[in-house]
Length: 61
Image 1 (cartoon, rainbow, N blue to C red):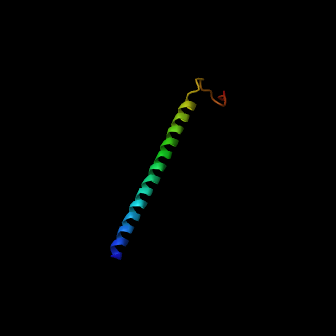
Image 2: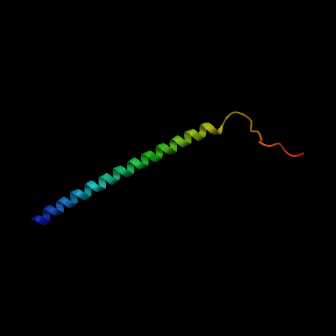
Image 3: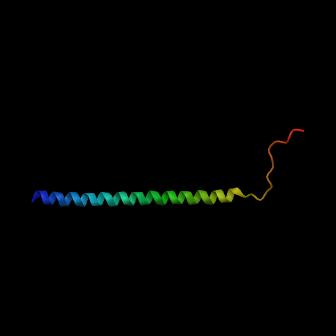
């Protein structure tokens, strides 16, 4: 009888651990996606200033 109860307890514990790990992975994926999206929006805003590009140094004659 004790083996059966211990087996049930262990099974429930493993299920809880697996669910927790799934939630952690989902949260990490969400944070990564949000960071990528923010970086994409920031890069898109910085790329086009509307000014013609000028060289920093003049060409030698």
